[in-house]
Length: 201
Image (spheres, rainbow, N blue to C red):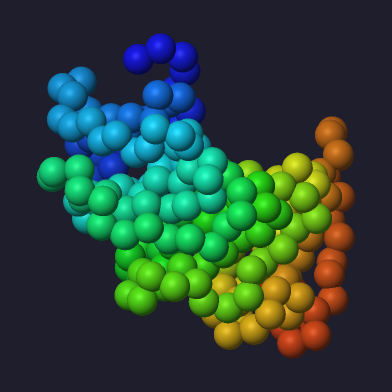
């Protein structure tokens, strides 16, 4: 491959890893370095993010065209295409039960996908600028997202499944090195607050 590696992810079983670069070929290796499969994602749009299914049998990819694709590892078959973002998908995160996929995009939004229906649920969770990273707490209670606006937003996941984005934001962290500024956002329907990770009610 010529160029660079855009993203690399280990499988949940720690027995293989996947990577992709500007040639748009998704490559999977064993932990011993054996190339297991090459998946040609697209000729036109670069893959920017990758994510494993929890059982290690499938891979999700996010691309510059705003699409998210699910691939079957054993044969490289494309299983689904998720469309909703209007710009590059920079980050993907799957819940531990494989039911929901989170995506962060340059279009300034985080979206939640129900993989049982392959549709988005709830309203997009909006930032003021590009969103580059998204993560889910292991207990599936909170979503954290951050990007170009120098803010990290903390969202109530269950509320996000049902309500609009301005009702589910718990906290907003403003980061201007070397200090960390914590700013609370008062929400209409969510009264719970977190202070640096400690829950308050």
